[in-house]
Length: 365
Ligand SMILES: *Cc1c(COP(=O)(O)O)cnc(C)c1O
Figure 1: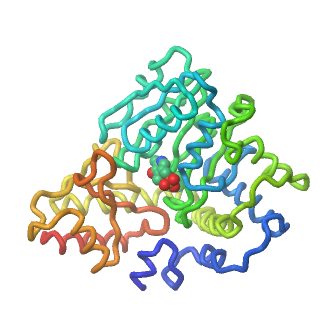
Figure 2: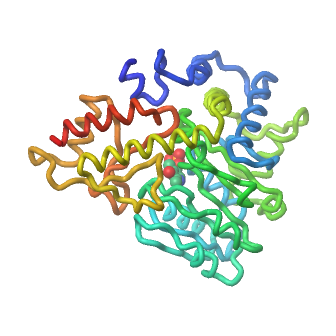
Figure 3: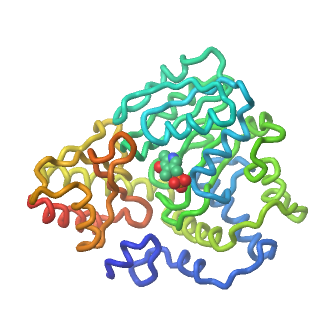
């Protein structure tokens, strides 16, 4: 196994478990209205329905990264002055609040300290009749899971927007089971495809309340629906990123073959293996156990790094000497934690053991 191929998100070679992705990336580019491509697009939407556990007709890979999905949700559902309740317990909840404010929402923030989960009761009681309640399922900045099901169960007439950017494919996402109105994700985290697309799904309830002429033309879901849903009567909206859709199609094919539940279980097992190993190295985990993500582990940076080196030095050594990339802290946790992603095809015991061995060496433990 070549460590470089492992380190690259989508390196070719025998260790790449998603050969369909490499094939799609290397394939000659065909036109975005070519029937062959349209077949791949339709199939991608079907696979996304399975991944999101939904029957929503409007389910598609939006052009742009996960943040485009976030922006599309607010731009299409929020009218100026609408009361919008946003859960904020990390960088991405903060981004949701900012995005909602920019489209004119009257944002009601419900906060929890970074590292703690949101309180569903507080979210439900924050406003008498919110137009919308929004929260992040898996907070990638802190490694904490939020309880979407409890918020969904009590949301009443409010629309519910769920950020599943770090959860889709890595932990149970039940769009119809929850009754979520918009859920969006990205291609590059637990789905293990290259970055560039934002899978998104929209309920019939949300479709009935879509803003008529949203301030973004590009992210106007009604216009996009005319392209993805209309079969033979498709109306050109914007050029679909053909190669990226093919790559996502391949990654979703691997997910369908493994099974969504099996993929979530693999992520869970790797997370446990990693977290137990980190504790055995004498390191402190940042997120409380009951609310800890498996696919993104936050570790408190130890005070006794040998040689007086910084936490960034440790990450650089892991990258240059061991071909393993871990993340630094984000936002207010910068310099305080490491964030170790174990997502998509990288969530494998061999990778976990390689990291634990390398980290033990670098930290002299
Ligand atoms: C990564 C991430 C985003 C942003 O996705 P991009 O693909 O970087 O635009 C949004 N929300 C969460 C929870 C994330 O982890």
